[in-house]
Image 1: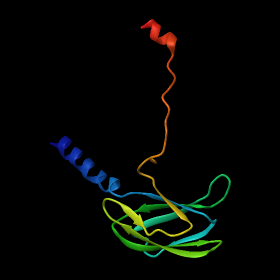
Image 2: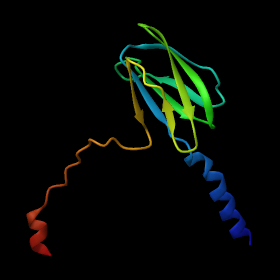
Image 3: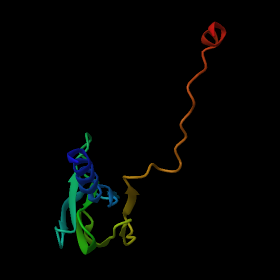
Image 4: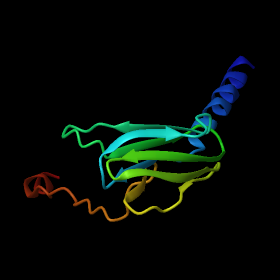
Length: 124
């Protein structure tokens, strides 16, 4: 009985972690600061790359709801409306930003097959 209850408890506690969709926002201009209106809905943080361009922002949803993200760039401050639901996370389209879902691989990736070793084929 303990094993069944432990299994059910583990399954139920892991479900909320898989419910939301993380996003990556790439800015055309370097990002100075990022603010969020309601930090209980999502966690927003800039990422500093090796080249120190500061153009990437990670959005990690915490619960369902609506809030506003204010991104302060060298070109000025812009506000992005963020809507988080159980199935997806959406941001209103704004010029100067590109949006990527971190949970799904991009569609335009071409992964080549590994080369075939002819010697290995003959040994079989």
